[in-house]
Amino acid sequence: MEQHHNAIIPAMRIIAAAMAAAGLSITAAQATTPTGFVGTQVARGAYGDIDLKLKTGTFDLKLDTKGASDIYVTRNAIAIGGQSGWHTHPGPSLITVTVGTITAYDDELCTPHVYNAGEGFVDSGDGDVHLLRNESGAVAETVAVQFVAAGAARRIDAPQPNNCNF
Image 1 (cartoon, helix red, strand yellow):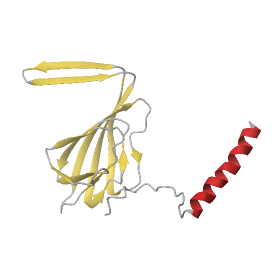
Image 2 (image 1 turned 120 degrees about the vertical axis):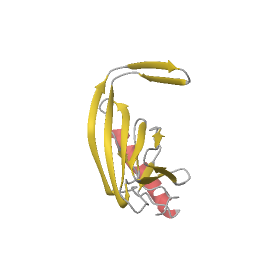
Image 3 (image 1 turned 90 degrees about the vertical axis):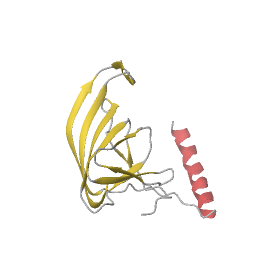
Image 4 (image 1 turned 180 degrees about the vertical axis):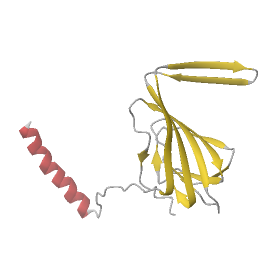
């Protein structure tokens, strides 16, 4: 093990020197801090496998999980000009705007998606980095129902994408 470790150190120095010569550097990406954003956990439920199927008329629902899950209900209050910070989730979220208007951004195109009270949207939770902002002139609130593997972090902070400069 000591011999393997000793071989890695010189290799790392060579890589670092080559990057420096090329004008490249290694920097740690910084997570963005929420501002004017308060998330309050309303409930958390622990579930085992879920195998739910329902069909009535034109409505068809399927929810199938394998393994233990934690399901959270979270209320998010967003002040005028507030934002959630860039983040992702390890599982899907159903987000409903309950008060006001919010604008959601994702890291792929940084395209704004505006949602008003009574409207909802789905965050697939498969690593999609996103940010919620209150760009309206009034307070806003959302309620999120989140599905994650038991014991997983509910939220994972992320750095601001390079193509979203605000």
